[in-house]
Length: 462
Image (cartoon, rainbow, N blue to C red; front, side, top):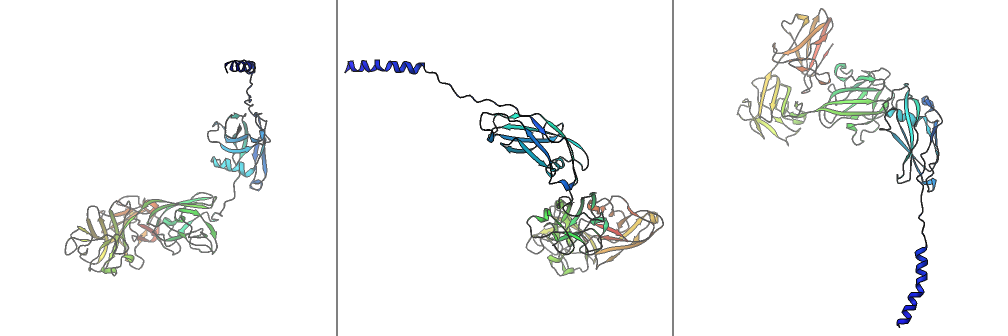
């Protein structure tokens, strides 16, 4: 067996020598060459009628990657000039060496950067080529074009009156017309944008009016059941059809922005109120229909005005029923000023009157101050008060004054400055114990003070 093995080894030597001398060559793929970008135009200034027309064609040279050019990825980047494409908008093309853009596409990019209508801006364009997995990226030269954005017709027609008002059960003035201009008119930001801060009661609804005092036209929504609509969404112009806009679930101050260009509105809370209901003998012990007190910042400190017509007692309730926390007084007569959370004796006042109620559910305290209101200002040399009378039907105070010359005035309680109101509150409401003088023109005027919404006190002048 040994000779046989020797010869076999020798027989394989030439084959091994042949294999050792054979040279293999690995495949080599070129890196490619940066593409050269060109544009069919250097300036784009068109009208809305041209929005669907092709206004720019970009072409570029083949980067000549080693693989099939049909799989090469091209990313077109467009940005405002001078930013080195730090906020570029990208469009991706596969395989082709050309792409075309409509006026609407370019206009949308320009407006996205906040460019103004009718103003010419410089925009930079470049191309980045790569394999489909983004490897081997090559960047082209930069092409600069001049773009003049055109004004897109608003999705919803803006008010021809250049004014907008809010009305509805969710508002302070309800559905009655005309609405108070001071507190329920929007500010016109520009031709297509209106904004205002308003009190909205929880669970109510509202509409928007272009003409105060008229139902001929309005703005509402197509379907009030759309989820999240209380926070904003699409709205429509209406001459009769449509549904009311649902308000937020909780009462408080909200800023509403109406964008006619986009056909969208937004509702953002400023202060969401916490409420205490004041059911009692004077109104049949019904929490659901009782007046309320509000904690404007939901910090446990509540206030509100209530016309208490009997001395049969009342309580504070955290819900519009008796299922929440109910507050009474620790003393039998109900006038100790100390709250008993969870029950206790009825709260009470010594006589029927219009009261300013305050409560603190953190400190467990409460108070009731009987108040009447008067007017004082330039019209009477800031001396003495013109008495106001209470209108229980409309829940407002009214007073008439004769004004010899334009000036200012304030509204104060009980003939002193311990409690008074001036201008400067949120949503054009009144500010307690401070604020500016309320302006008034010459003539005979009736001043109306509305305190029935806790934490949101307003006035009007007739």
